[in-house]
Image 1 (cartoon, one colour):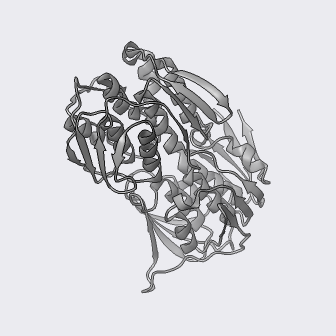
Image 2 (cartoon, one colour):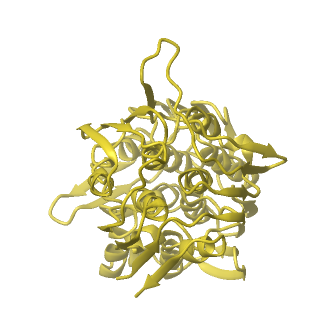
Image 3 (tube, one colour):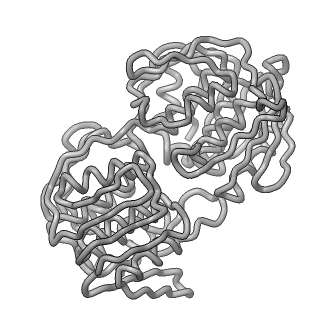
Length: 435
């Protein structure tokens, strides 16, 4: 288990390029199972979750070739269905949340899909009902082995239908889309998630021969086809990493340029940082964040406290609320952070309180933050990373704190951020990785 030893109080400067989008990668890599032809994917982030999924695909029988550091080709010509019942498959999938999105493609192409209860971040209950209810509406039979926590779906033939999703789940929408593209007839999905990464998946599938309309809306229509072909796909930059760098620049009072951010796909993220008082300039497709000694949180028009909450796209992604919360600790003013979608994602704030932050945890979903306005620096401490996003929020706090902090369990951060210590040290940070 690795530790980050972080010397706080150093300012960053320079340019940083965001990695490919983690959440898009997990969908796109599962989609290669839909065809026996070659699929080439570019801008794949070299992070733990993604590399584990690629390794799992290889063990299933997918031919994988690394073309460059961030480009791979995949050919799922022959899949070993027996491996899906093995103990090795069971153990690997349990460690990887994204493995659940293999079920839709496997069901569409082979008529079967097996998955143990997947792992991932410890951020509260993350139910899978939406996935399996969608498969059942398409005609699949579903079974759950409670003793082994093992899900299975089977279908001789999937048939298109109308479905209204019980929640706009991103992974659920992706999984159902991949099952429906080869179903017989027409499938209509209402209340579908419409994040840029879902849009990317749909456009990739259309290039492979699928017939999906309504892309970028919450109403998708899918005309089933008998087979799909190969394609080439380039992933978007990771909007969560872009947001993390914006928050990091503000907290450390640094001047940064974030390159190639795909600004039109950032949605409300820049505007929400602006409401926190953080200045930035769009320069082409780059974001320039000037050095700021202070930033002030806006109030609502009636003078009430600012409320920042997550919501399905085009609302604010829940993955960035940890960043907004830690940035608020050094703002001028107060803000209520409302995490609606996960009940355990705010519990890391006790670490920030230990560092001297003024935070009131109202309940599992809400925290009120009163900022120090950089008049009182956070103090160094020892802490552990509970999940990917909270881990980076704690890293940002440590970089702005007075003294040397230690962050344990940094493998959680590695799951979502490629060589984050090396990349930040190149900008002037002082982060030492200790194995």
